[in-house]
Image 1: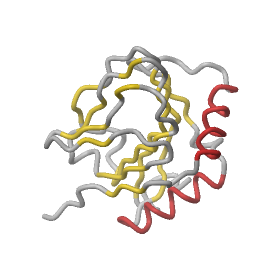
Image 2 (image 1 turned 30 degrees about the vertical axis):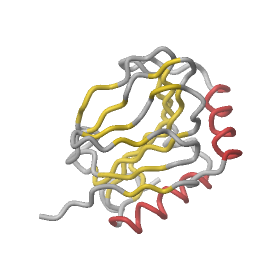
Image 3 (image 1 turned 180 degrees about the vertical axis):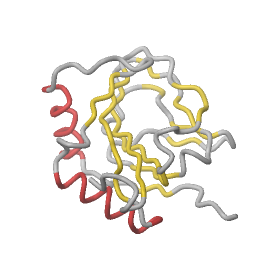
Length: 160
């Protein structure tokens, strides 16, 4: 069976949108720690422009829409995350990482096959996280902010 490896989209979000989302995160009550990160679920409270952009690209890749997503702060220093598969849901059809900033060191997204993506503000990568093992390199000097998204078929999840 053929699997889509990865779709990368530079300038998926502009710098102003990214800054607005980081500010939005920082205005919320501090979320609970998960592993070495602080994820803030935004499935119900995300700005509509963000939902629309993610859903539009998800539909064009493999007919998928947002199931749930979060803004994740990786404080510095941070050991990163070892290679793993996404276990978001049995219905997950696509995973995505959107970089909201790049003013830190490390924090690359990498895959078991050696493919690596450096953080670039506004860059989005979409891939099948249940099929491709991936991780995050250690982060140093400043916090890393990303949006982690898990998508599903329109009838399989909340869809927004």
